[in-house]
Image 1 (cartoon, rainbow, N blue to C red):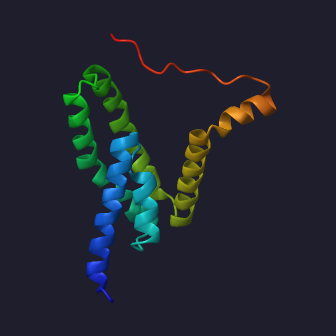
Image 2 (cartoon, rainbow, N blue to C red):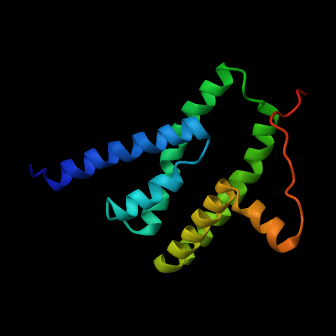
Length: 147
């Protein structure tokens, strides 16, 4: 079965969006870890366009997840607004900086970030801290106390 290129892009885009939405909703990750590589490797876009797509898609995805968390009383609005101020300013600055980087440099930086995220997620950083720096990892509480 041979799908036309436009239908293939349409279907792959839906699958990528579904996968990123599932990860974002269940694990709280920004879908960029899925969407950027998928846009570049599967859909054939350049790194800059892949990152732009990812950022634009995060708006409705994030709102959907935030509304659900708000309804379930898992959202504290004061820190949201305070954090948002810094995030918006940094987002403007960082996206301007990203436009100044070549595609290959941007891909390398993104790849390093994904690698770092994987290392943190697997707990390898704790092993490195113990093995090479002879320090015990810092324990984090499961829940943040109520305000």
